[in-house]
Length: 614
Image (cartoon, rainbow, N blue to C red; front, top):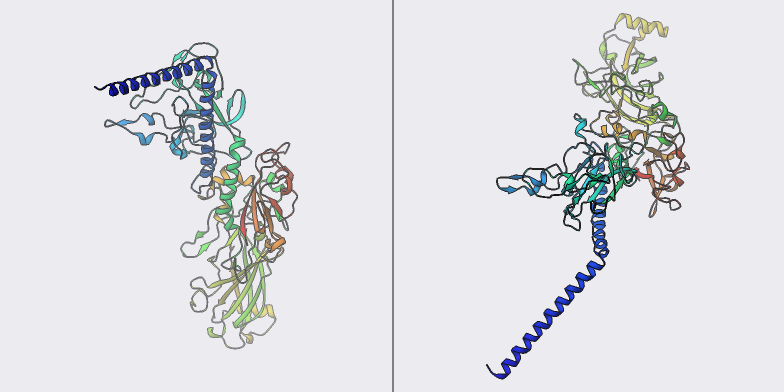
């Protein structure tokens, strides 16, 4: 080795020794600092835990809102159960079944405690500062409890939404998310049961909550805490209250109602005028007033553009297929056993008027007619006297006609027309003249300013071969000669107004709505132009408007979920200010998605959703 190489080797050795000294001094400084100021590390851990707990909380609230708005969700507002017990430890054929980790159980015994179902929430597997996955607690009444089998269902709405968990004695908590921290050797006393927490993963054995949550947080009741005896407690807990969760549920419910029920409320299309385009005239029923809430009737009130939804019904299920005369569709019986009964059932709300306008359009001449209404649901029967001049053969007796039938209170309800109700007294054999095999054709329908509706029927009565008795009755009625070939036709129109299926509490699409009581907690408004007393249209200031980021005055009809009571608002409500706040409670046509003068959720919590817009 040359002298120069030796010097270079010696210098490198000295540099490495110097670097080692610096590293040792730095480690010593860190250790001394940590020992002298342990709060710094504790604060860092708690800050990390706070971040992941908040991330999990936002994911939970968002997930509940998404589920509530899903049209397949039968229990809007429910929160998922914790991870199924033991799912994280599923082991089969020598392989850990990691795909089961983080999946919520389908139902759970409430209050339920378990690991956070991160996979169900659609987030990453979050861990606290000690590397432990987060834990999770669900309040009774907010998840699908195995105690309700069968059926699995909840009852959640704005006024029935209190959480039943407590945290440090504060209540109204729906869920808790917990960072369990490192395992502890818990000493007995101060509300704690002695336990040396062990966290060993055992195949097909569920985790024991006592090895993760400390003291009162693991005792199986609904009371939880954020602190406990020193050295025996290190849980970090974040609460989710009903006040934080319900606004997203209420918004989802209003939106879901508008999508699922809203289109059935509209009187347009089909026999009615088109909903849009040339000749459009979209009508919506009048609202029910607040007195109908206490009575439970939900019948619309004449000229009332704002209030409760008009949710009365008149029958016992869908229309019936006649036997043996199918394919005709008969009106359903009036009301009946549950769920087709109760105060919402109103078989006499919509009734025929006994003054239809009957006009002959071909064949024999109408001399006069008289009509009567009977039965529940109504049937309209008309005796029509005609004359055909001379001759007794059938060819001289036929007559085509139009019949404008008016029904009361259609605009106070949500109904559809049964175009296959079985009329009698009309010719069902002439396929070229009428809608075979029904014997008639409904050609138009209009809503009238008084809430009634008029339906036009085109039909034909058959030629007959001079029935002596009916001819005599006709002639005596007219005090005319039999030479006029007078004949009396008896025409019966059965009840044509069917309930929209959405009105029934057992309807597969809307059962969630009635079972959870949302029909008693929703406000409805229609523009004056789109109410039965209007023209069927609105434009600009004559429409309803919603103030949000921008002003929109294009709404024909809308609904609001009023939210939980704010301040001293009484429930159930008697007037609009018991439900709505600020600019939403003044009964004008301008509504607010957010009233800038009122703090959100503290003084204003209405949610506005359009049913229909221009």
